[in-house]
Image (cartoon, rainbow, N blue to C red; front, side):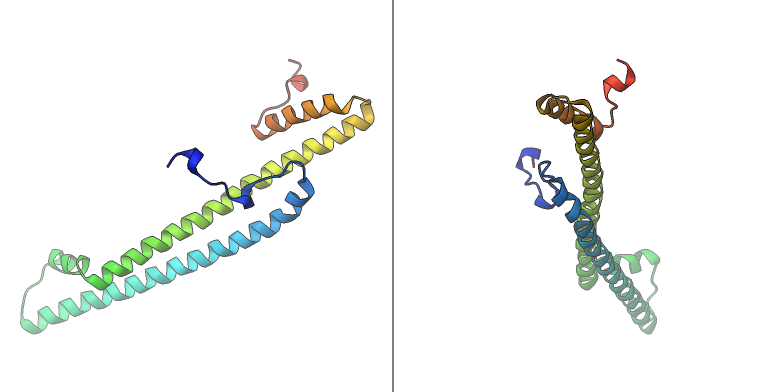
Length: 166
């Protein structure tokens, strides 16, 4: 899959022309997706517990059957029987699926944390633009261009060149 084929999640987009809405939605979105991640982790843990419980039952059954028949077992034979048990294979597949769901939920939470940092930077730049215009009398057109460059610099972790004396 190419990056240009990926559809951007609307919850991760920022409308720089409507920062108050972005700020007000951010905590609700973070809470919503954090709860999804917690539920996904609980679901994964339940699947792991079911797998561990069933693995123990299967191992005990294999050993009991061998003991009753007088057959000698090696650990590799027990392990091979466990690995080929159909019910255990489906439980392992369920654990893999729950891990995938958990990974997606945690990635969404991390993406929202990144969005929060971007919204903060944009708000700081918008506020500095507003203060700069009111104090300096600079035309809005010039300040807007500077603000856009400043937002890009802030989001990329750079300081404005003029503040460094360059």
